[in-house]
Image (cartoon, rainbow over all chains, first blue to last red):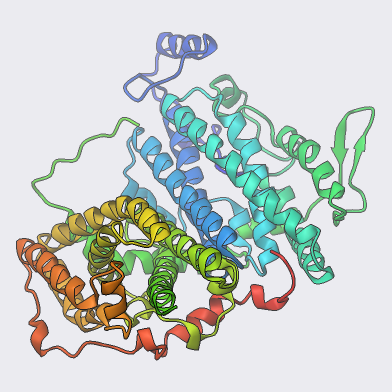
Length: 329
Length: 253
């Protein structure tokens, strides 16, 4: 659920408009089926524009809010290497937000409107960033596992149909690969460290496991599945498929470091080749989405602080004589 | 040996300034006034912390001092030689921007001179760092101008930050007891000469931006940092910076 909050196509408010003739829709679909990318100036169905805007906006918000839990540890990173790597890493996340807001702007919503919707809690971001980074161990777990989960999601999305989003994701994935190395290096240092360091790391794995299982969204049997979104290559893999891919890649890496995973029922079914696990608490997932997570209020308060303290900068930069142009990311 | 002591003192104060200012600038990561400025401050923070690391490395390799991680993360407040300007807390973007403007112009001029120092490791490093600082000063100057010419409020905020920061900025140039040695050894012409060049440079830029240069002849420079007398802000900064590493002094991180 990094940026996958989809709009319900069955909601009457989202019914396609009359002028979307079958001819236009067929041509649009044919383009996607041919593997061509949709570009900002191309015709697109209203629902496609709406879904993509929501998805890219939410992804951008996730990058921006994602800078906060890790950002608080920049000033406490324990040596030069970790301090510089963490600043660079969090800076990349803010850079990703910038790239993604640019991509979303090509669909017609301004960055300012998106930041405002984020601040008032109208626009969402990944639930995983509503949990606190309590210790330095959390930084290792976020750097390796949360970024790892994000990469699974982003690599899949980079094969989507909207040109500006795919191009942004391509660049983002390249940078995320370095984040993963950075996270892994940090994780290993703690895993092979003193008993206290190991304990700190294990505690962090225990705390983050459920948010990580929540990360890809509710199980397929519960989630509103849209054939349409798959056909339009807006959604490219199901939540369960992505979760399964994550577990395939990361469970062995966690176990090889002698860490344990806080789910006694986690096992790979050798016949179905699918992971089985205890059902995470989905009530909590929905509670956090609705704003009642451990850090929702704090995160939005930070965005409010940023807005209030820097309105004067924005005002000074806005000159009435400057005409707004539509960016083509 | 006098030469060694003189160079060490110079390196320590430069490294400490860079580390502490880099730390302060990194506090903007994630909460900057615009995404672009957020990214810019993070870049400059990385550069500064990198400079500190390289200066401590010279101290370690050529003067038998401890390794950079120990020098950066395990010394007490009383061993730091940074100036007061870099210690002041990050509370306001106008102040951070002005601090970066004032400090980086001084830093740029310092490294420009040090690239001709008779102590080769420092001269080499200065050549490299000078190139990076060029972008810092370019950035500072663009933003000072933009905001000075933005509107009444932004102009007033920048002017007020300049007025507030100036006595602290003068503290960058606190004279050292080793200046004569540094001059004789053809390493550095001294803080006083640097300050003169700096005043000329920033006065021109400040006035070009439509702002006023404070009359520095009537200001009292905030001195003491170079002698390890610090503001009340340095100790909490160091406590925070070393919070993780202090958990276990013998662990490797």
